[in-house]
Image 1: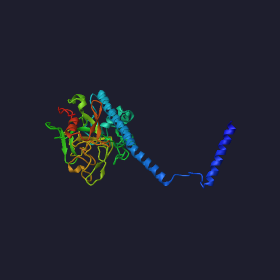
Image 2: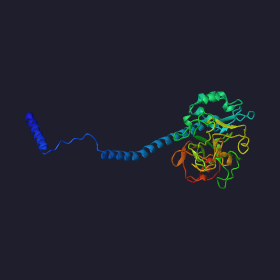
Image 3: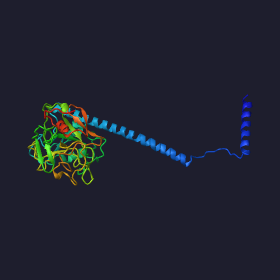
Image 4: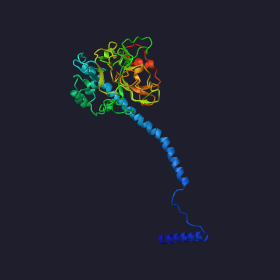
Length: 359
């Protein structure tokens, strides 16, 4: 039966070929796409990529923002760990001279991030850190400890800013900053008089959690731990009036480890006019993500407190769309939208203004 069917099929095919040949028809063959077909395929692929790329980018940014949120949460938990041991939160920065706020040396001190090292699994570095010596945070031992150490826990993965400090090129520049409080006049009906104001570096507040030589206790947060923020982001470029992208942040010049110098006082007695710049800190004076139209050049010599090498009022900013993350003293992390009024941000930055914060 099979042989008979096979023979029948073959005969049919042969007869069909003969008929096509007599009619002058040739068998159809396709060796390639036509140009039109190729262009159509390319156009379809382009449309699919255009549709999928934003979704892929959004998914990646969501992942980076989640990592940033986790970083800040871990830092806030580390601050609570410090509080459990020392019965106070870490200083925003302090003199590297024993006792903690010694008055006999003229060295630059360490930032709040140094004091958190034992609580972020960097105890080995902290144990070798030298909190003394005329060169303070810049002594050879401390420079070697932080040399080429990237410190990812202090960085937002969305940040496009350089990984290393400008003047201390082997020290990591980071994207998180301690919040010292808010500038005078930012909260209506509240007199913030714990302010050291300079014409060079801007306003330095002592009304928050992390300020120069601070010894803040959780009991000092009379507004409640859920209403006070301690750490924020400075993770994106600012833009000067001439359109230049500027890497202005608390750690840009010398990196994550440097704090204040010379003075052992707190604002308003803290005197920044004699070059007591407290690095890695900011005092809220401007709205979130206010990135554009800052002065050209170094910027911080025009009284705005925003610029290179010590500006104390560089706004909280990030590369996240529409806002920035902040760490709250109850251990949570919030996303503060760009549209948040300055007064709300200032209230969050102040530990004891006693006012109700708008939702």
